[in-house]
Image (tube, one colour):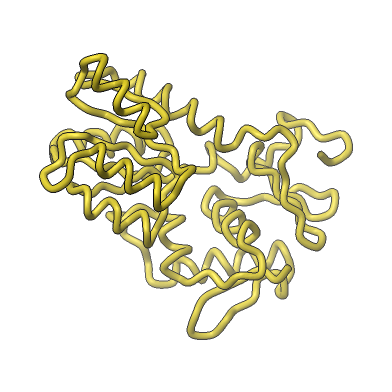
Length: 238
């Protein structure tokens, strides 16, 4: 923790809200899924939706989310099968089951199969959001966790970035982009990977949006902090 650090005093004013977590919603009810996407987006989450278990598994393989919200009554695979396969793919990926199966035995089976939480339908949106916030706090809850590369230090829990002792003014997406690059220092991140961290699938994204964010970060961090790997993507050297 930097000297004299105060989360309230040192918060950078350019950041609005929290570093948005990505939720993969695996739900075959299109109307419910659309309602959840709208409601959770208003709470600051980035939500992508698939309607089948197999599509969900493929998505986790290629573009892992931060949290999975999983229905059990899927058209192709039983949700518990999906959960078990998710655990083999990503042992620590948080999964919240959201299902019409509301008997105690169903809840026990879900939790014993590896779910982090279990919420029966019908449910109140406020309760779902509260449960997701609990998972969010667990994901970001290491008090003094920080990433330092050269003169740049990132404090994900406080959504704060510093260069030396100076706070950086970053937009929400600039912060998310920098966090992804610094967490994967030394590894090239493709354009598709970075855009998936910044936008949900159905957002309209200008063709040069990523380049604009990279340009803005370089102005604030120095031209050499983020390297371009031509034809592949970007990286922050260790």
